Image (tube, rainbow, N blue to C red; front, side, top):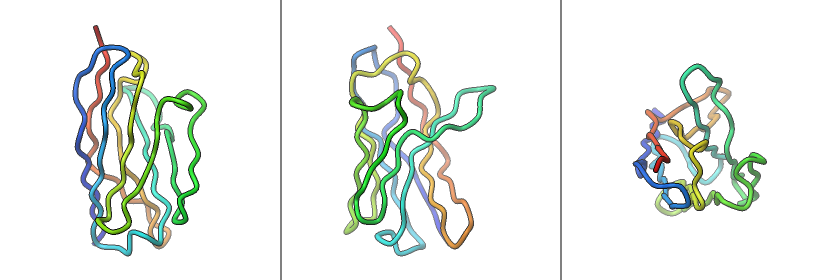
Amino acid sequence: QVRLVESGGGSVQPGGSLRLSCAASGMNFRLYAMDWYRQTPGKQRELVARITSDGSTNYADSVKGRFTISRDNVRWRLFLQMNSLRPEDTAAYYCHVKYRDLDFWGQGTQVTVSS
């Protein structure tokens, strides 16, 4: 069974940095595109960044130049390096994979950016 477990969230001041991690199990991690989404109360979950199985990346316009998605295909981990954080980046962040046409999500990790 696919399992995704996020870690690394927390509270940070504007301009600060955080690094999120997602540990994957139950699938051949290296074969699948992986995503980071985020969600704030009352809003739809939005795609933040995606990395394909061959390492190609794309980002939401709002995070381009500030966030970097990466993956470790040996340890089956997904990362999101977040720099120059802004209050509007405050959200619950989720790791996601579409595996055999099914969507799998982690439990989420909260990021709060506030002075």
